[in-house]
Length: 356
Ligand code: UD1
Image (tube, rainbow, N blue to C red; front, side):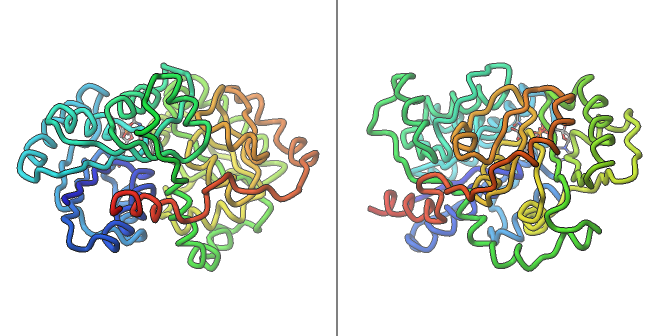
């Protein structure tokens, strides 16, 4: 068997690392080829993650970099095609919903190579999100769909996808979190940033709908106001950093920091009093860790996190940030159960299926 994994962005590494590990262990005789598209390329967005996650150095670096959706997708397809032609994998494994995912799935299917999609079947039902388009295409063309939550089954059925392609295996991102738990519990990132565990709001925002327009200055001024009540720590994604250059963000209590490595980020997440985000993965990690999460979006493709009781959809409305302290005070602090199969063993289930 020849497996070829295509990764390109920070969350891709987190979702794929345990699958590569499990398959290499289970099928050491098989060929395991890692292709990094280069969609994310800053050391803090890429290399640091691969090192911390113990992913072997990629066999191919496509260096596609940033660009418009068409340019980034087209460059990835053009550079991946000769790699697939030479390697002739039996299965191309793609995670998530980023442009690299779409490009890799399309390239492989057009070459008659089978595709497996990790984190299949999520739907926000919002076609203005590039990720929604990417995941629909990947699901449509993948032969193996690895599902991390039960609602994905219904979403895929509605699109007429045959049952035999679906495999409910659980959440591989949580596999990584479980594997790193000893390290992040000992990392003490909060103390290094000068905040008390349990006291602060951790913020991550990077979606174009929020950061590429007028909502960003409004969000920063709401965060600055909130910082009078609780410290706010905001590791800033490069897209957001670029947009922030125009915005006055100086305020005591509001701390804008560089993107963090994954162990430090999980440490800060596990110790946060609450989290404000527009990321998909962070809605899941907070659910697993039982940390209150406020999502600054109108919708989520991960309703399982809302049902679990940890995630609250605030809407795409910076004014809603002011309500966070009151919502925290009223919150039922009963511990939540992680969703089914978010148990650290999803990658093992995938290895069982592929080795069987
Ligand atoms: C991408 C994904 C998004 C995912 C996110 C995770 C798409 C359409 N979007 O968004 O779904 O949630 O990754 O982080 O695939 N940049 C750098 N250095 C880097 C990477 C990006 O400076 O290493 C800057 C560039 O200015 C670039 C911008 O960030 O233009 C956006 O990068 P891009 O990969 O296009 O999208 P993300 O916003 O990172």
